[in-house]
Structures are given as structure tokens and as C-alpha cells.
Image (tube, rainbow, N blue to C red; front, side, top):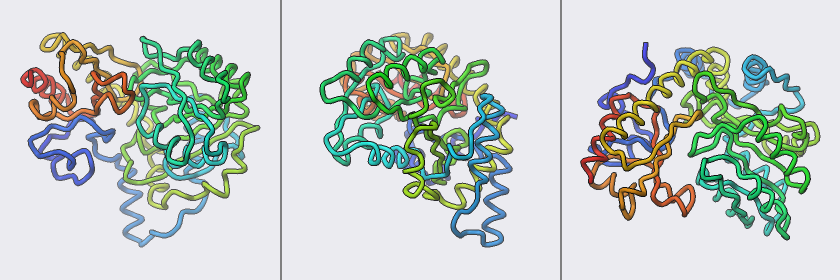
Length: 372
């Protein structure tokens, strides 16, 4: 049975951001919420907790142990207990890591176009951004990275998005190994956001940064919230290499998530591995549908399906629009994320959420074309 089969009528009853931020005649394919029902085991865990009044503070290692079991099965990664901890959501974790690693005025490297909260989490407490843009092909540019790491102000940290949002690039083992070599040579701590780790197309391979040589000082953070559509239940995990600052973070980050979040995330990791793989097979089909439909109806829009995430990154430059996101929303009544939010040089791009009913994709392209 299809996972991405919910109709617009069914989804309109939801009160979350995706379905409430725009008027009801706008088709929302923007923020990273998936149009899915929760896995039955997740619903069972939540229902049981509410039924018996199990609404207190979190306890135990169930969440981290469920992740360790998944890591062993998916990536053959034996993650020691001392190198993992439960924590809050991914961006809150990154903020705490940056506060522990850096001081006001220090610089942090990012790879635009990149997830907009990366910028906010760096600058909100007085840290500065150094940009090392991705290559034209959407991959890590090592000459640019090395120049960023070698700047006179000596960046203290580097935020890696892996797989990358919004491009969907899955960094290869070779790329990540070279990245660690460069970072270590310049004394830069790698912090990897791996929340999309299981959201990869069938047959593709994701490499956790901490499985590689040279990652002893690195940190990564993830959550089941993205892959199993549990963003409303805040919880996550932080992992560190053997020489990382993870021990320093334990008193700060420990149990910052909620009890219900940990129960739901643990159930997802334990019982719904096949579900997320089936989901990504459907997403891969949606990527091909989008590419085919654009080629037929809107060939000016350039799109190359990526191997990771359920996001599409569209180059609308040849349409000649002042603001593609605004034009599509106002005239086409279809909502995407604005490319400029991911990097000012990407004002002609939009990000599209493909974790939806395939009918929505066809309808979205029709509305894009009609808006012109």
C-alpha cells in the first residue's frame, strides 16, 4: 500500500505549519513536513502513554540504544555508549555545541546554498559566518573549503549538512575523508547535521562522518523526527568522536527532549526501518515524475533529481521572474521555499517538498505553468 496517498481534503484538517501558513486555495509543497500517517507502532507508543498518563520526564537509554541498533544494521557502525547521548532537536543541539566550542567573534564555515537555520544559529550569539559555496554541481568544493579554513581569523568550526539540504547531495566516503583531513590540518571542528541520513534513494549509500578516520574530534547530531515525520515531537541525539567535547556537552544537552518524543522516536527506529525505505522508493518515483512533468510542461526550469532527501532544488532563472517563489504563490497558488533563504545568490531557485501524493506534483507543475 502506498505511503504517500493522502488526499488534499484529508490533509486540510491538519493544524501544522505546512497546512496553515497559506490560504486554503494554495497547494503547499514547501516546509519539510511529509504528507504521511505515522507508523502504527509510533501511534501505539503515543496512545499507550496518553492512556496510562505516562506524561512525565524522560528516562533511560531506549532512544540512543535504538539508534545504535539501526547504525549497526544500516552502516555496520559499532557506536560506543560513551559516544552517544539523547538531547533536544538538531538545531538546538548545534547551537549548544557552537556555544561550547566558540566565543563571540569566532567564525564558522558553511556551504551555501544551505538550510537557513544554519545562519541563524551561528549569528544569534555573535559568531560570524564564512561561506564556502558548493560547486556548480552541488558538491563540496575543496579549494574553496581550504581557503575558508585557512583564513586569517582561523574558523573554529564547520557546519556540514549531510545529506545536503536543499540540494539533496549525498557526500561520498572519499569526500568526507578529504574534508576531515582538511579540517584537522587547520584545527577546525566538524559538526555534521545528519538528520536526513536515512532519507536516501534506493541503492544509494550514506556515510556517517564518525565512521571515518580523522573524525576523533568531530560531532554529529540527528533525530528520527525528519525521516518519520515527527517534527512536532522534539528530540534528538548527539554523537561524538573519541576526542570530541561530548563529555562537556552531557550536562548541557542531557534529556532536553520530551518523554513523548523519545517514546515516538524510539518506536520509529525500532519498528519502522522498512517503512522509511518504502517511503524513499515512492519519493524517488516522485523525483522522476517531477523531472518528466517539468520537461514536458515547463522545460525552462532546470532540475536534476538528487540521490538524497525528499527535496527538489529547481533553477528557475530562465523564466525571467523577479521572485519565482512569490510569483508561483501569488499567481499559481502553489507554495515553495524561496531559494534566497538558502543563499542570496540563489534568488532564482525554489525548494520543493516531494514527500506528498504524486497528484500534487502534477498539479503543482500545472499551476507553475499557468502562473506564467
